[in-house]
Image 1 (cartoon, rainbow, N blue to C red):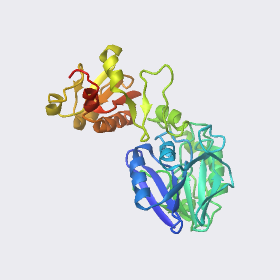
Image 2 (tube, rainbow, N blue to C red):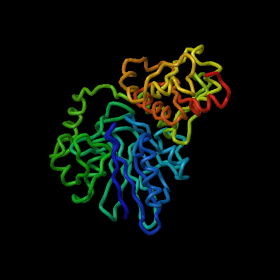
Image 3 (cartoon, rainbow, N blue to C red):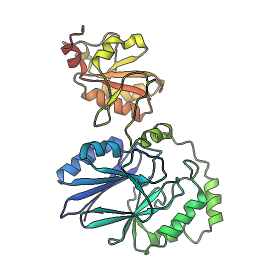
Image 4 (cartoon, one colour):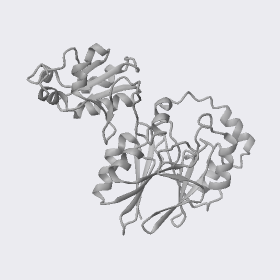
Length: 348
């Protein structure tokens, strides 16, 4: 079996690519939106056919790449039944089997971190993907998304710790550079769930954590309820459309028609030479080169409406994604950049 463990440094999230080497059929577990291009390139380089994109739960710390990968590869998405993700192609239930070539993943319901956590088992290989239910020497928090400490304890002890001790466990995250553990290790060394610790003791530990409010939950949960493809409603600040790479865009025509008059800040991320050069710039736009954007944006209002502009739309697409990652909620790239602006005949 082909196996790749991939990492997103921003959220310390692990994504797992599994494939049958004979048929080239593949599944991807816990895709991250910002890493979709990386994952897609690897899938294409290895000449794989992506069959499923699986989420261990509805994530609060990052936006899933499942919906975008479904659009790109025609794969099916899977989220736990009852998790409230109506856009998912498959509602995963305990005991379900996911086939890719000659290999099978078994779906195991392990709620507690959220109400819809799943662990995926490769029983023939002695491997389990535990998401946030069981981390290396830790576990997911239980104070959001219908989490419950007693439920998590019972999931781990009843579903995961009952696996053979040499079963390899691959978690959804790790914040200390660790990549894998085993059932036996966690039963002995996990400071929350191992060492013979009782359910009541675990509940006390979780209640005493006093963790801060999740940084990205308010943006991530709505997006993940829509398979990671954000939508714009009737009352939105602009007629934003999402590309296949999930970049928010508005047309040059809308910027020309509304622009600064609509209370939208226009940010040009080119160099000073380009800004003053032959393609000109959108009237009223602010020059903030891409290399300095993140530092400059640190003090901006996260609810402000922003349109990002560059030469052709590529740098502004990257800038828009960066701003959304920084929790800006009304951002778009101007489609086609200043080339499109000039092609449409708008004044320089």
